[in-house]
Amino acid sequence: MRRTLVASLACGLAGLLLAGCGLGDVVEPDAPVPGTTLPANFPAPVYAPDANPPTAAAFGLGRSLFYDVRLSRDGSVSCGSCHQQFVAFANADHRLSHGVANRLGTRNAPALQNLRWKSEFFWDGGPKNLETLPLAPLTNPLEMDETLPRVLARLNADADYPRRFAAVYGAGPIDSYQFLRALAQYTAALTSANSRYDKVVRGEAGAVLTAGEGRGRVLVAQKCASCHATDLFTDETYRNNGLSATFEADSGRAHITRRTTDVGRFKVPSLRNVALTAPYMHDGRFATLAQVLAHYDHGVVASPTLDPALRPAGIPLTATEEADIIAFLHTLTDDSFIHDVRLAAQP
Image (cartoon, rainbow, N blue to C red; front, side, top):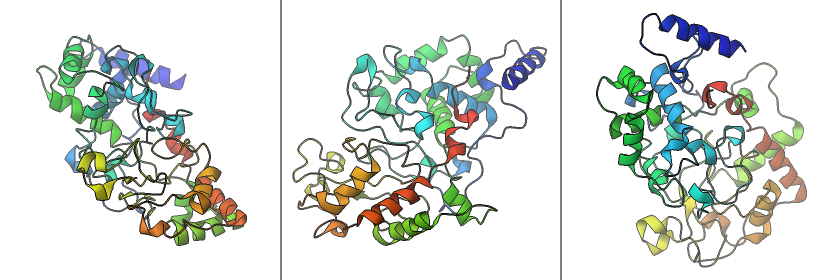
């Protein structure tokens, strides 16, 4: 109710000065643009804020685009359809992504979080820039199945977008540069750094781990941190974690590089919000964290590119160790991130 009143009042006042007012660019006076403060416990970002300086108007524009189904060929899916905020912008319950006409993709939709710290994206590292990243799902026939020229034509013919783009980028038709920069304002803002773990690391009052969670933290540092490194909980490398002997269904990183040494290697995902982002692995084969740990304990399949960290026989874990690790992984859930109304679709 308060948000509605604020938006209505803002539009009413702005209407005295402007010809029109869209809800998408109304930002509450006291609400900063998300992600403008870089977490102290994170490394330096790849996509620094000064590369695309955050503003309320540009962020609001990017948010509108992220949730706009008109970016897809048949108007049935948006970016937000496969990247849902309540599960850290992953896709709840879907092993594989679903696109236009309910077409089934080939991989599990990864969580969108802390993208500002990535230099390569997707399970295979195909896209290498946050601003050009949306072109892949936009044009993929199994996802949005659209073309950039048709999207731009649709936006330019819209009753509201041209005015909002002009307010940010100046007068003129909306072009691809503006479209991609606006979307990057939103995706770069998806910063998750306020879990209970973070509060403990920062020494915030009242933030503690239970005994089991503390043991789990030590175990993760001992047994998982060679891949899930730093407070981003990923080293952003590509590794074969023993899901197959041949990877005939999906060659992973080799799909991009064409190198046999990359067959079966996939991007190491972050452990942040991992308790929310099931199903797991690039093909969503595991439904629970317990199944993931069971794989590392006794399910690793040998192959020529199997990661050295998993040789000769995975990562042996006792039942108690598995329980402690799972307890710790739950402390990486960032409730403020998944409930931040500034990141949600606006009415």
